Length: 416
Image (tube, rainbow, N blue to C red):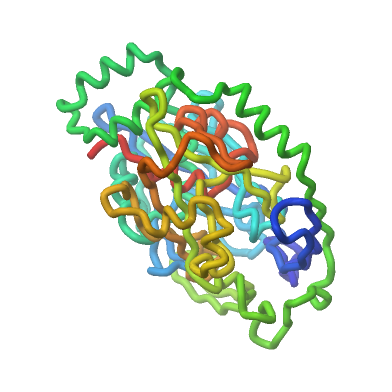
């Protein structure tokens, strides 16, 4: 199922075989969007503080209609004007950006269970000149964006993935201790300083960077992922009906059709397929202080659309299936702990949306949780402890940290 131009994206059928997990063979629909699009921020300093230009953007699948998106959020078909509409606002600033203006430039993966090897260019540029601020755009500091992320479904997935890649540098223990002395003056809580320490400190890690590379490499070498395209009409256990494509048991998700009319867009009316989830999901990082530094339980996770077999994912990531049933709770490490966690151990807990241009009202519970004594240092196979500093290093490289992990990292704040 594709656009008549052959551009934008298509809904394909795939046959998946793997030696990962409890299910070794399945078939499913998936979004195939091979183009690399822009997810970009224009930034500018005001009074010594860096501000980001955000857009209040309406997407057809948004839970609450309007969410805060990057300055530029556009597929290649979109900014190439395949739709014969207008070019996206501020596009020329990114196309004409000089190397010294670029603060961040990365290729990052999208949702591996829903997209087939999809990547976007996450980019942040800095300008010095004054530019017109169009309707629906606003300058916000990074701190303000992180505060707004504490509200349900307000900051969209594309904003979260881009700001997750912002590097904060690496410092020795002595430099961090000096920062600790300034903690009260900076109005930081103890946990916000622990986040800052885990982000900045380049010592005290339970595992070296070489250990982590070996951990991931060993699993990529052991696990196999074979994905073959098949006709949609031939997908086993999926039913093609007039109004949607669905699983025979009404699980996982549906492919639906949407007729869209939105003002202030490059094109104001169109039709498209969308993915509608069967239920809300949950993504959570569990963290614990080890060697005086906050570490996070990270899992390697295989998904059908992954570009390179496995990606590093949150401690718990349940986006499909009924994870609340007894069987799911017993089979998924740490899920029971996350679902039954004491309120005082929850640091962050909000509903965050998936990207509203492809997903219809999909929201997942995002959580950051402190471990109690029941969480031991020893972890199940495919799980490992990492500091925030180590995860930030992995974000610099393509296809290591998945989009759910990056969304949670973006939510971490260093102020109370």
